[in-house]
Image (cartoon, rainbow, N blue to C red; front, side):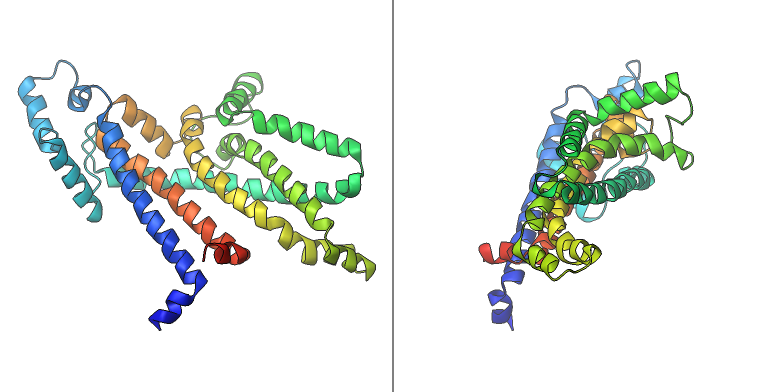
Amino acid sequence: MVAGWRDNPWTRFVARRAVRLLVSLAVLVSSAFALIHLIPGDPVRAALGVTAPADLVAARRAQLGLDRPLYEQFWAYVSGLFRGDLGVSSATGLPVADVIGQRLPDTLALAGAAFVVILLVAVPLGVAMAVLTRGGRRRGAELAFTGATGVLVAVPEFLLAVGLVFAFAVTWPVLPVAGNAGAAAYLLPVAALAVAPAAALARVIRVEGLAVLGQDYVRTARAKRLPARLIYLRHALPNMLTAGLTIAGMMLTGMIAGTVLVETIFAWPGLGTAFVDAITQKDYSLAQGIVLVYGAAVLLVNFLVDLVLSKADPRSTIREG
């Protein structure tokens, strides 16, 4: 049975990806610990204030374990991770895991809503433009699509967020621009996160669609006078989405990191805002915990995208077998 697993390209592929994921997580944990400790300044003094008594500062440093050698701090940090202990916030005294647990749902809700919007906009738009412009037809529509999406892709999400705040908080105050109270509060942050990725993904799906629509099996389907609905939805669409879903998975990882800036601009009570506060307050433990959550999320999404792609296109597994 073991030999059968070893001979299976799929299991070998999954095993290789799992090993890479574990190595990447180990590098992430080490890098997060090292980078956060390179930040100059005393986190305890920053949390207690410059006028705090020296004995109080020393006691707090001992309580947090910051008076121990760096290798002992690293060992305590790594062993704590295996127990689910991310440490204690030096600014608030609360467990880091509790702070992350309170903030993470809001960040996931924002990123998830933006990702759904991206798929709902980009997939139909890309497919429709591929159908409309196949074979060099409708040059005007093609130029308008490529020009508009090219501009939208080039706009950074934080700059778009600032523009939306200016438009809907200063010029036309019709939408909330801070907090997450109600469904309307999602509109502007989701738009800031989704516009550029949706434009980029629509361009990818259109190009992929043009290639698929030129394949022999699509021409054969037309020659059989199948209804257009069957040709596009049953025969062409699944093959159009292979590359598109791969790009969408990569965009999701970038979007996770992008929430830091967008949450800060819109005062969204998620992990991004907590991370910025932790950096400014030199709250090592909280910043480390949030870096680990963001990094682990990116690595896990990439791992799942690889698995989905290898299933959707078995040639990718065989190539590495």
